[in-house]
Length: 453
Image 1 (tube, rainbow, N blue to C red):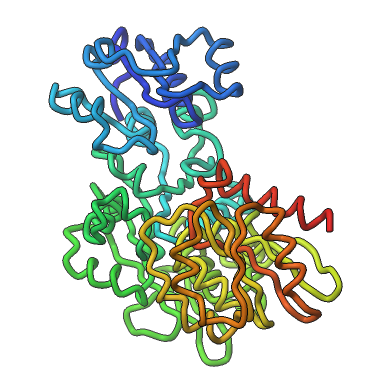
Image 2 (cartoon, rainbow, N blue to C red):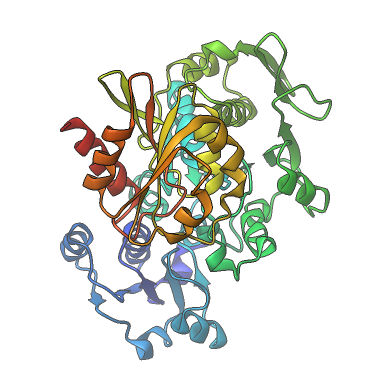
């Protein structure tokens, strides 16, 4: 933990006026730094009001390069790539460029439980936080969910933080350490950010193990080929805590043939029937195992973990039931922004599916879901500005495929195609930014449209 006095009157430039940026600005201002928040676009009203209320200076519509390159420290938004000209110039000038998580970690010695992976991060993060709160711990929620870690460190300190971390956030973390690091899986995602090279994306993900010591833990899914291969070459002192769908002698958690999930954590051996875990689907079994291991490592009683695994409610936009109309179930899985996430959604379907795909393609390879599409999908509705890649790939693979360019047209097409006993599944495989501001915006507008049917 760094001494705050050493940062008094130092200059901090924060690039990006979102949740993480404003949180970093508040923390910097609270320890006496001279702070400027700089956004290349328009500062959102919510954060503009917060900066004005606190008297923290900001600029928008572009960055003052001269001031930025005179800074002592720069904290950048995760959405700004390391190839951005200002970031490259700052690094060349020897200015430390940090993530908000790295910066916040400098000023707290609280325990950190950090979760990453291509899919399942949010569910697992919220589930671990739910267990800790049920156990009565003073736990904060941060990263891609909850409030800014930096803001909480500055004004709402917690004994332990549960943090969802994307590869973007991990890129600019150097001294930060996770006491418990959770790696769920690695599948192709955001490859446009990583020169379309899986090894670059994988390397970014594995930064979550950086700085771990022998009394720290690395929880990971043994069945993921990329993760398991990387673990063999991992230069880390952390204690490994793998989990598996089936019994494996190396696993500390697995499910047996009778549907009992076993946990064999040092000092805590316990079980729970799979049917007693509230979240359905194979992917949620993995998420629940990761959460159960993490909670056991924090010495939470197994009775408390069982209760929390049994009463946890599903995450919004992840296989979220919207309504049933005329015998058709409508499911919002807008959070499925990559192919592997849609694979898990389709794997959990038990009725014929009308599948909504489309959005901003990130270099997707749709062959991964093709077997499940052939098995379970009766029709595909493409929803995006440009559906050419989807139409070319899936034409002839399903009974019918429709080309739509708005939410209203997509929902109308699904209403026409779905029959009693079917499921309409919004699980787009793609980012939302062609027609929507975020996957949350896409999911909520989908739910609103379905509610009006």
